[in-house]
Image (cartoon, rainbow, N blue to C red):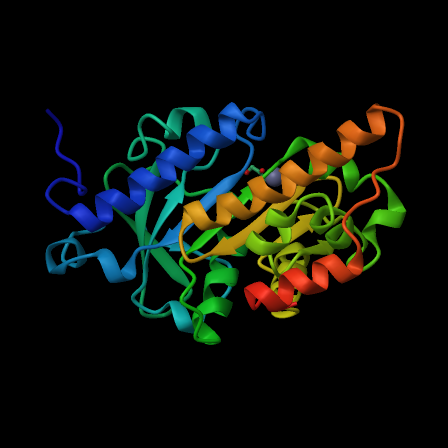
Length: 271
Ligand code: 2HA
Ligand code: ZN
């Protein structure tokens, strides 16, 4: 049987298997049509000396920008054009582990196969660079296309700052408790563009862990890929409750501002 860099490396294998588990959820939820969505995780703390010593199995590739905080970092990245539903079963055939080179402007693939990383790699790496730069312990970035949240982003009034956050928080207490920074909004921009990457970083810097890309999808950051997924899932649950209330013919009351304030105080939430 073919060996994998994950063999005998429990922590690294667990992190990559968690990506595979989440990729399966994204597909099952209908958020990952064809090759939709991307996941990258910073595995630098999980690679041992033997992995660090692995030779490159690809050419040096340009990131397209210089990211000084990523020097010597390692990432597992979904492959470009690869499907989440395939990654769920075969993560090392539909993604790869890359090493950032000392110039902070190039990377090379080191395992298991020369699967080219996602077309959104520069934007994901820019976000990781930003996170490390501010001392964050977050290791995961997830981009996906949750149906109900994307639908809500087609309505201009919802895109004013924190309008959607407040509607979603007010649908069920869990949403504020488990997505306590709310949902940042980034206006429509070309997928994969530097502008979209920068606007995403600005929204994360504005203290959001989950950001809506208008008429496209969401981008979430978290300690690990499961945490990032759970926040998107929780927000989507609220969006479905809102939609279901509307489709039953009424506008849902939502919890009151006082009730949400009480929740923040009791659970020591940041907002
Ligand atoms: O890579 O979802 O936005 C697939 C995407 C890009
Ligand atoms: Zn997308």
